[in-house]
Every structure is written in structure tokens, then in C-alpha cells.
Length: 261
Image 1: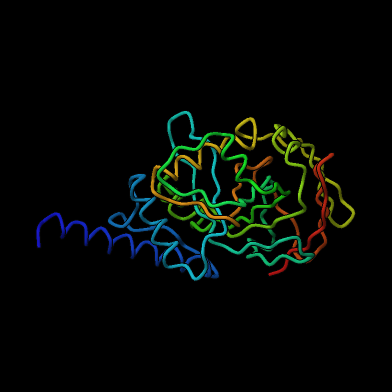
Image 2 (image 1 turned 90 degrees about the vertical axis):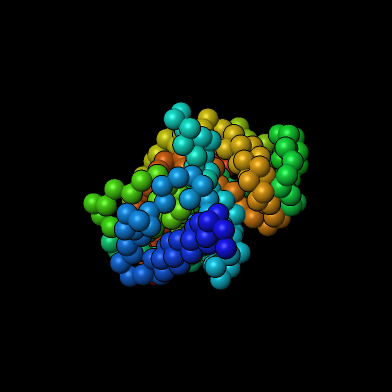
């Protein structure tokens, strides 16, 4: 066996060890996604390799992807959604964090067509592949121990704290594409909280356009039925468990959901 083959085999074993560790943390009572120094992902290639093995080892196919456009320093924000998708149900199961549900309000894009890899897609082609747009809540689960400072590639490999996705009602596609900001109202146990939701990438479709072509260059096909979320309108919001929550996106839609462990 050549030295190159040995290095490839060692890399595969390393990625497999990391992937199995990270998948196990998703079901742990007290997750600890941190690694020892020899195992820690240190490059973007490491993070992508781990993500692809996690997809292969996970019991379900990905429900989609989360992303932002690249940061000013060039950092990539893109990870497969390996949790469960809950579509417009009154109760949504979630792993609580300190007795609360952690959510992020988003707009989700649902693909109606496959987008095979290996080609560059125009914005019009990507728009045509989107079957519908929806109110959505990303379900959040921090999996690194408190106080552990994970590097960007560790967080990327771990899935950027995603544990699933709640899909709310369909919203008008044209309105979704104009949603640079959304007044959001959450009401629970009679207490109302108003938020000025602002998209971190100006418009929610901007990261969508970037992600499709980024994954295509990596040889990753997006498939019909997958959801793509492209950035939170207000970061993480903590809400109570087992208590009905009303969610209103002003002039776009509303729904009610209760989170259960």
C-alpha cells in the first residue's frame, strides 16, 4: 500500500470516528461534542468530510440544509439538517435545553425539483426549483460543553447547533423574496413579545442562490422535498415547554405550536 493510500485510509477512519462521536451527542442527555486535539476538525475540508460521513451514517436522509452567505472573512456557513422535520403540527418534539425550547424564526424554501451537482445554476433556475416558501422555526441544541470554545470547523462539522426544523404555513413566495425584515410577535401564556426581525443576509434568497452553486461545485445534489433555511430573523429565542406558543409574521402568516420533550 502506498503512503498516499495509507493517509487516505487514516483520514477516512478519523472522519468516521468524529462522525460517530457527533451523532452520538445528538441523543445524549448532556452532549459533549468537543474533541481531543488530535481528532478536532481543523480545516473546511475536514468539516465537509465529517458532514458527508454523518449523512451516510445517519438513520434518515437529510431534511435539507442551513446556510448563510460567506462571512466577510470568507468563513463558510453551510450544514446539512440531520434532525427531524415537523410539518404544521400542534405539538413539536424537541430536546429541551435547561428546561426550555430554543428556536430561531426563519423562512424555509422547499425544493420541488432535484438540483444535480456539476453545473452552475442561474438565479432564475433556482427560483424555478422552489416549490413553496414557509414560515419556519429552526430547532436549536447547543452540543458543546459550556465554556468549551469550539473552533469554526468543529461547529460546522457538528451541524451548527441544529436539531431539527418546524415548518409552519406556506407563505406567498413573492412576499418571502422581499422579506428583508419582518415584525415578529410571539405570545405564550398571555405574555406577548414583539421582535423586529431583520435578515442577516439582506434577503432570504441570497444564501439560497449561493448554497445551490456551492454544493454543486462540491458534487452534492440537492433533492426535491428538501428544505433550505437561510438565516434567522432574530437569533436564538428561548420559550417554555408544554405551553402553546403563538407565532405571527406580520402580513405573512401565523401558527400555534407547543414544544414537548
